[in-house]
Image (cartoon, rainbow over all chains, first blue to last red; front, side, top):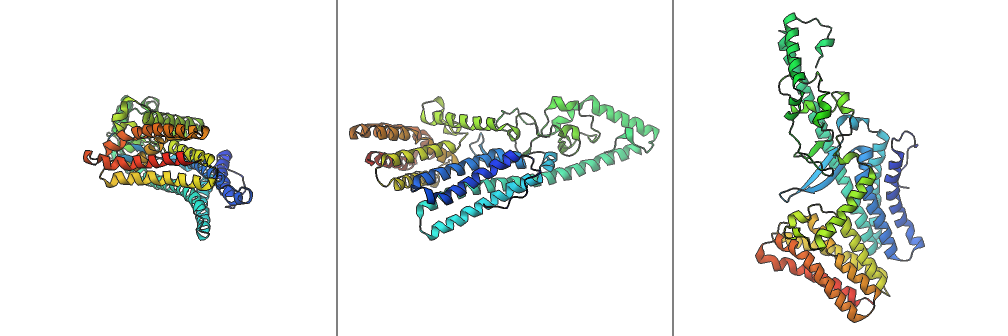
Length: 183
Length: 279
């Protein structure tokens, strides 16, 4: 409901794409439709937050890796400092990534965050603090993923540029070397 | 970058021998090519280590690629580190495309699940049960994660909500918000006291320390006797505080230990009261 899906052909990893969208959509759908069926806020809260947490985990650990080849996490090094690590596949594999997959990945990521913001505004208008809590939690999870992966992508681009310039430099050096040896 | 053997430009005779000499040098010691890049220490399967904030995933382990090292694009002098990162230069190295084995980018999903689950269990054991590393908190919760705390907070909220006969939703929402906000505020408290603690590590710790209270709440839900509740809550409260003590106290200046610990204790006492008072 929250995006126009392109015709489902040529996805390289249809199952992963499906799961990537499934939990996001389920959390949003459940939140919106639950008021019609359930009276109890607790169930709405727990199920929505659980679905959002599952979605966070799936995106961070599974679909991020498989659809766009990116991964981010946090480590604490020996000196007790917290270090954020960003990882991506090598240049060739990145170039081989399916365009449709990554299109789906990024668009659903952004759109679900926007959807939660809209729902948050609704509950703000209606002064429903408990529903605002739910929206807050889900929004935090979405935004964490967005920030993590965007940073990953920027690092990936920087890395590719560095690599490209070094390749050119090394190619240039080797050409010079062979040129000198000819003389 | 040209391969002299397939060149169509005829080379001068002496230069051909020079090139041969150089090629022999390269082929004779392929291993010298690799160490030029910053060596990565042998790493456990779960944590790809890098000094840069970002690593290429296809760091070739020396043995398999030394046989591929007849790559003419490798320049003659001790090569620039990047030239050994095949990236886009030669398909034979990059065909292992998805990287060397200790690499979390390509592990099967089930491995990730198992890894996360075992991390939750080990963190729980580290925090809540006696173990030799307790006095060194920096080492103890190195692998923080927020899944454990998430489950424990939700479980506590659910238990309190089930025990309540009226206003179940409010109880749950209050318990959840109290615990989540409380953890954040307690962490800020330590940071503002000039303590050295990592935000997420502290959140994770405070969440795991809720485990005894979870057990207490479960028991109180099952047995409705007030006296039993008071005893159980006191015991689990003491357990939670004992669990949180080493981490919080070592993070701050010794003269400010009490200032850091008192709010933690206060929060657990208030949760304890919630548990007792619910009927």
